[in-house]
Image 1 (cartoon, rainbow, N blue to C red):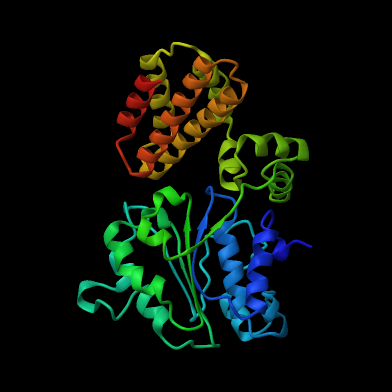
Image 2: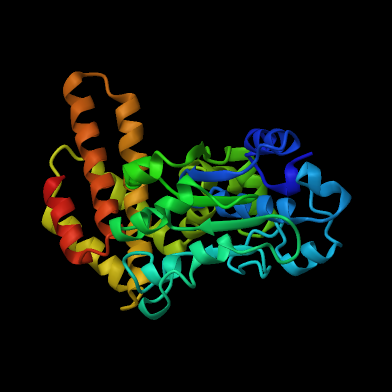
Length: 334
């Protein structure tokens, strides 16, 4: 049976359970993998199991009835993990939507209370309910050098009986000082059948076949699959992929179409960035297939260069660059 109904990551769970049963589960971990494949859900479920005071807690199976489980309040079986667990021995920080990086005060407190508040201070205190504390730093891709330096000591020498989990999408986006102080746990994309079952269960699609088709286009990501299930995306997909197939791409026409498509969602920056990333993910899948099908060195090189250009464009979007500029620069490079 799948652990807490979290699909696709049973092998990783077994590694954690084995370490926990041997009394060796502590320290700092870096969860790496694409967005929307269950890293955050896994981290929350792991925290709930570690903090459980029931008899099944030693197996990382939360009992659901003890004081700790009731306080934690998180249901790992839900596909929505926007509600942050409320537990006195669990601490969580993430990048606010309107910020480019995780604010320093979230980690070590405001200037007036530096070192006396923030995640590093919270996890250093004596546990309130049990004998363990868990902290999660989401969006670790957005730790700047100042923030990373602020948590180095805590990562290198975590307080006794504490577990720190950083969640990111790529080791390349983590500073070397962070990578060297964490045990890296790599999460694979969800298998198509597992993702299709989740989509069907949550009424994103109406048939398993629909779910499988959507799963294959979404790189094993539940979040991406939900976003791809959009009539507007489907309408533009065929023409967009046709343009990408051309040996010589009309960059001006393509840039105009993409800007118009982004403008349809309004002026709210997060929505505009999300829509552009959906389009860019279609391009990633397209060029990956071209790379697989390449039958000459020249065609392989073209596909590889175009794929690399998409990855760089996504990185610029994540850095909150001006979207029309990103689109124009990417289309010109194509």
